[in-house]
Image 1 (cartoon, helix red, strand yellow):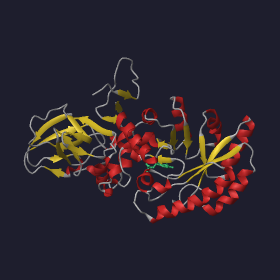
Image 2 (tube, helix red, strand yellow):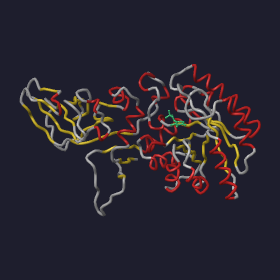
Image 3 (cartoon, helix red, strand yellow):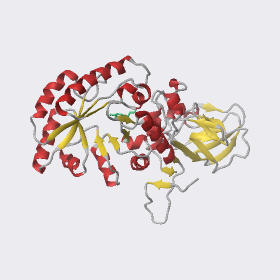
Image 4 (tube, protein in one colour):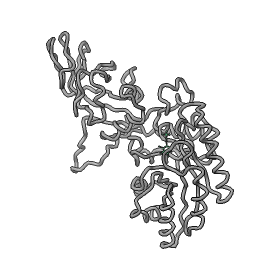
Length: 389
Ligand SMILES: *Cc1c(COP(=O)(O)O)cnc(C)c1O
């Protein structure tokens, strides 16, 4: 294994301040996945790497750097502050702020050369005022609601808004964007319908103002090539997962993606208990015979959900072992009865590969009735990360 970089930076000089728990992020997997998605998009269509939510738990700056090394020059975040952090870290290229910004921060959009996505007339007016005051012009992307019922103008509200914005000084319509609710499902009717609505709006606006259009998320990149438009915006696929999870079956493109994150920890203590022992809060597990149990420094505080009480599994010595009793705030217990030579300090894989066994974000998601996205955010954003080339 090559040298690893720890984040956050040590506070005490000369110390490592390592946590017991470690998120390992493979920078080469991130680069590989970018290349897979870029090859699907084709030479003429840039891939906007969605790095919001600290790059789905992978660390925003480090992930953006990995994508940039693979050739990426377009990034998407939710909030303005994330975009500023990216620029301050030296990320070049286009950075889209998709969720808006606070009026008092508006100047940062100009100072850091960021692209705002707008969905209210009030925002357009504020941008126009600021642009005029600075003697500059700003290009904006307009968010259209083509069926998600989230942010954006409904298509029939759009002409009125566009007419209004066209009269404002210092602001230019540089593009339009929308978002699919069901693109992860191949052949979904809402995707075809949403795309039709969006492309009609795009044709009209493009003919009047020029600009570019984008709607495709990972699901659409994998399932709906007709929707690529001028840029595709990919998140989950860049981190190595298909948006539909395991229900997608053996999708050829999904098979090429490599999960970039794993989560490892170590055993704190091993002990053998007599039959009848109750384990953890509430004694929801009681040993029928003598058991050997390992205590792990992983709990719901670390993103390992309490839903895994008596249900989760981890990998020890290449074998799947079950969680016993309730998951605590920063500990849980697992059953290592019958496994030879298990000792304190042994490596435990909560997510990832050990020997021939693998626990994926999708496996964990299933136990939480959730999706890989949430597992990656929970584990990645609540633990120390280490990057491996
Ligand atoms: C997060 C996000 C995406 C990426 O979605 P994935 O399903 O992860 O590919 C695309 N567009 C917008 C606006 C987003 O917020």
